Image (cartoon, rainbow, N blue to C red; front, side):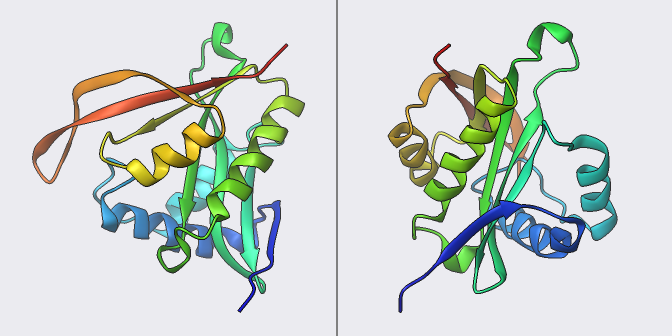
Length: 168
């Protein structure tokens, strides 16, 4: 069965599906140090307070179902870092490995350049090879690894930082 993916800006109506996908990422322990599942109130605050035109949130739809999302997040409140966006991408568990991340990443990069970001960064676990493969294909490079950066299930874990510079 052929999949047709539509990428568009997220709306408040998408927040329940975005939340469900994020909570899958928390449960699977491959994409975030978060351990506690989030609720709709959390996601509404995240969307309304932290995201505007510049810090976009986009979704990937398959037959009107949100199957993935990506966001540009503020890296720092210091004005010196206004050109840097932190990236988040989450794919619905049953749709991982189907190329949806590539569609989202390509579009969110386009939005980042249009919104005058000169660089995107992301944090990933060194063992998340599927994610790293996606980022490397799009020109991201490993900057380094933070040793014992956080705890997951009461064990210290390392976190890798990756970046992509946009040509100016």
